Length: 332
Image (cartoon, rainbow, N blue to C red; front, side, top):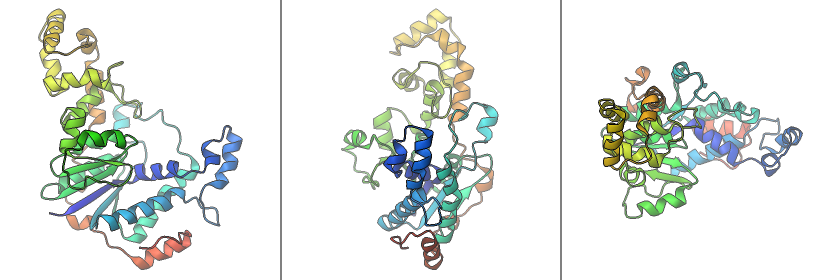
């Protein structure tokens, strides 16, 4: 059984950027102060910003060494114009423009990984999550897959052979909840929480596949997914525990008069749910579920083989680009 690691490159690079900014930039109060503080962000002697690239490269090198990684894929977003934006123009439309010191590092990071000999994946019209989902589905049968991301959406990909290492500030609060689990790789990298199938069930009280239904009901403000207004996870979870999916819930309540449907869900212990409001927002809930669903059937990736994820480390090329970027402390 092989161990395959899939990294959300866009997520990791952004995390490394914001996590390694100088205080002068982080706490700048005006545009002028922030502009002046840009000079304090790690960069080469020729003015190329490298704070995110340096720290992501260091992280990946540490992962390869600590976990003896042989198969690895780094997946990237290309733009926010994906099939989800076509379905719902407001999807991620509210997000601020990527700051220049970060945006300039995406192509640079990909160049560094290319020189290192690490496989990368990106595709127009899809998000990194879709590529990770398709690769995970293709190779999880008979192998162990580990997904590294800060995006909670990938938790829907968890199964008996797929674990998500979620980069979250809540790790210290989550670990006590799974202290009885004897999971392989329980000790994930610092700041990452290992969401195995059992861990997900304990923490969410649901199955991973139900995460899309949960988001269908509650929405996700960070992605611009609407959901049903004012519905939180505490209200939505009992619905899914009783009905499994949004579709099953609507199928039952639509057969009844509103008063009878309200009594039915009350008898099933589902509280704070107004049937009339649920019916009015059915299309919104189903749209939101669709937006939250990761595409695990990207056609271009169906015929990939495990060899496409095999690391082919090139020390000479890596040393050259490390030297060019003045990464003197990094070695392959």
